[in-house]
Each structure stands twice: as structure tokens, then as C-alpha cells.
Image 1 (cartoon, rainbow, N blue to C red):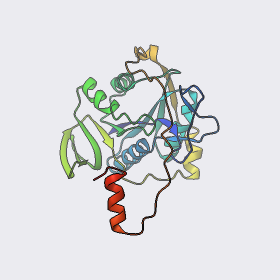
Image 2 (image 1 turned 90 degrees about the horizontal axis):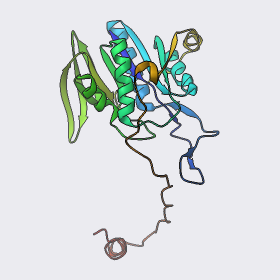
Image 3 (image 1 turned 180 degrees about the vertical axis):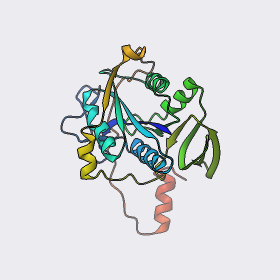
Amino acid sequence: MKFLCTVKRVTDYEAKIRINSDGSDIVTDGVNMIINPFDEIGVEEALRLKEKHGGEVVVLSIGTSDSVQQLRSAMAMGADRGILVKNEGDMDSATVAKIIQKVAEDEQPDMIMMGKQAIDGDSNQAAQMLAEYLGWPQATYAFKVEVEGTDATVVREADGGMETVKVGLPAVITTDLRLNEPRYASLPGIMKAKRKPLAEKTLQELGVTATTRVVMKGLEAPPSKSAGQIVPDVDTLIEKLRNEAKAI
């Protein structure tokens, strides 16, 4: 089996993010950058399926040359090779899906594994659009993935519980937080990753135009939280919830 896994470069979720003075973007200077955690879970699941069924795991990132760091990290986990689609500008989910579609048409994977969303944009749209562009079935929010023959059975998290779906391969699957615990890269894995093949492509080579339908007007920090209050009894709490907070 061949697995194609997305690897997006995002800011560390533990970092304190600042917005620049004009509100146009976040400040990334000095901020640690990581693999999008949901994508990392996707890479781990693809590696586990490869260990069980055999095959190849290819990791894909879209962005600047800085994304090579995240691709090498995924290859240190065990991915076989990487692809970087170079782009300097902003992209919306539709453009990202179009790029992945073109790579998938070249690579012909049996399964595309993506994080359910990226922790920076939180759009949760690219995978669904990709499945539509490719005409492939999709299973989102995967909690468990099993492959048998030409089908994949996915237990997915849904409102009110779990739902089990079966999709024919090739398919697009997005991973949720509780699917697995990604492995740490070993020292031999890190050394091997430096020698694994990494191809670079451009939007022009793929025949994609970086059009952006969604325009970000600006960013602003959330309002600071006011200090909490300690109340002497339940009656006072109810009175404050009713008259001050207007919550009841």
C-alpha cells in the first residue's frame, strides 16, 4: 500500500503567540515550529498500517523551504520520502486541496491520511474538498482505522458517540486526537532521515494557480479575562448568575 500524508508546519501549541502591530499576521520570530499535531497522528497511523500491510509512506508539505524541517522530522519517524511543494504566499483550503489533488494524481496512493484540521487556521475543510476533487470516498475524525483488502473500516468520532463506516480504497481519511500516540524519532531514524529522498515541486509544475477566495482582513487578540470572584454561599452565586452574568 502507498500512503500519502500531509505535514503542515505550524507554531508550537505551547508557544505564546503575538500579533504584529498592524494586526496583519502573527509574529513567528523566535517561536518554535512543529508538525501540525493532527498531521503527526496521521503519519503515525500510516506507519502502523505500513508495518502491518507493507508499502510506502510519502509525506507532503506545502510552503517555504523551512517546511523541510517538518518533512525530515516525519521521515525520522519512519516515512520513506518527502515532497515539498514550494509556495511563499497565503493559500486557502481550496488551493491546498487542489495542490494535494495534483500530487495524488502523480503518486497514486491507496490512502491519503490528513489531520482533521490544522491548529493554526482550524478550518477543517481541505480534506473534504480534496475528496470531492478526486472523487474519492472519505472518512473523517478517525478513532480507529483497519484495512482489509481494498476496503478500510473507520471508527469515527461523531456527535453523541462513535460511528463505524467502510470506504473503498483509494480514500481520504482524517485523523482525530485519540487515534494513536505518535512515536518519538530514534537517533538512527534521525540519521537515516537526512539521506531519504525529498523532491521539490512548484505550483507551476503542478498546474495550480495560488488563488485565494478567503481573505483575512485582520487579527486581534482575545480580550483579557476579568478576575474571578469568591462567593460565600450558593444563594449569592445564584443571585450573581441571574442578575450580573445574566446566565440564568
